[in-house]
Structures are given as structure tokens and as C-alpha cells.
Image (spheres, rainbow, N blue to C red):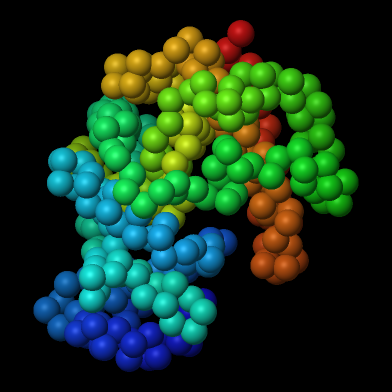
Length: 314
């Protein structure tokens, strides 16, 4: 947690004319750490420390992209600029401040919210396809398909990680289709590309009643094959093949996917979850012993669930 540094960070923020008061405990995750603050007017904000060692160019690219989305009617919630920058560095850490959005995460049992979420994702993909990236190639060293350290590191993690036997069996049976349908054609430039959010989970789609009020957490956003955008929602939002096909059809109406791209979308959850398994296995020192075991077992369960989704397409 970064609560112990709250006063130092707040002092740093005062240099930008921002005066905030710490409010409550921090929420933590493996990628970023978050605290909630309130200013003198009673307005709430989110202060996030990012631990992905992101460069200034990618942070600026994120801010410009979300500003573009907001200007075109999509409720993306991006970082607030301070002294023209959407972030500041302090003691080898990168911090950003976001407006606090009132609302609750998507209720996947609510069909009205699901339909609204699918429409929002479709609108997002449409806007992304029209966006001209100003700051070169915006990649993510872990989650960008053009840079997946896949076969190079994967066998090592399989051999060294405990409880990895189920992963090994799944990979052996799915490897050829995973490469032939997704990885190879995407790397060859055969699939449409653009900026993807990459983390459309229920908690990142905020609703007030049945209205989508905000799309948050752009930490993993990057330039990639559009089919990789289905990796999270196919696994975390959609509860059936029917819903996955519905989301795919919404996106297809905006982007016009080929039949090959539509089939490859069903392999995107497996690729992403295999990479996430590698990420967890390779960051054992970032967790306590019990937390590492829990994270690893959760990753293995998600790989198995993603493998089941692959079976839905011939």
C-alpha cells in the first residue's frame, strides 16, 4: 500500500495547485495501487500509482486517446492534466489523478446493462478504428500480440511453476489452432488493428441505474489486433455462446470482421489468460506465499474457462 507515502505525495501535488485530503484505505492490485481523495470543495478523486514502468509517451497517448473518446460521446474516464501533463513522477513511481465516478460495476445478470455495455464496446471500437495515433506505436510489452514473449518463455514457466500440469495439457491440445487462427495471422498484419481497452471487466464499466456512466482503468490499453478486445468480455461479461455471438455481431457492425477474425476472437481469451499465467508465474516475488498460490490457481482456472470458449467455434 502507498498510504505511508500519502503526505509526501500530497505535498508533491500542491506544486500543481492541487490540494487533496486522503480519504479512507487504499485498494490494491498486482498492477496498480489506488487511493481516494477529496478536495476542498468536497469533490472526490482517484490517485493511482502505476507499477508497469510505463514511459511518458504511452501515458500521454492514453490521455489523448481518452480525451478523443470523451469528445465523441463515449464516457471514457481519463487522467486529469496537471501542468499540461496527465501524470507526474515521484520517487521512481508514476502517479495519475482521475475524477471519481459515481456508479456501480456492470451487473452481468441485468440484460439491459449487458445490452448497454455491448453497445458501448461497439461504439468504442468504431471510434478507435477512426483514430489516428499521434505518438507512434503504442504497445504494451506484456499484452500486445506483436510482442507476446510466448513460446520463448512459456515452456520455462510451465516447467518451473507449481500446479501447472492442467495448463500444459491445455496448451498441448490447443497450440496449433491458437497460432494458426490468432497469433500468426495477427502478426502477419491480416487482422484489423487499433487501440483496444484490453480490460473490459464488469468493474471497469460503471453504471448508474441502467446507464453506462464511465469506462475506467486504461492501464492496459494499447495498439493491437481488434480481435484481442474480446479476450476479457468473452470470459468476464458474456455468460453464454449466445451472448458472445451477440457482442461479436455488435462489433462486426462497426468494423466488418472477416470470418477468420470472427473465429479467432474465440481464441483471444485463451491467449490472454496464458500470458497472464506467465505474468503471475514470473512475478512470484511480488506476492506473499499464500497470495501467490491464490493468484496462480485463479490464473489456471481462467485458462481452463478460456479453453472451453475455444471449443465453441469449429
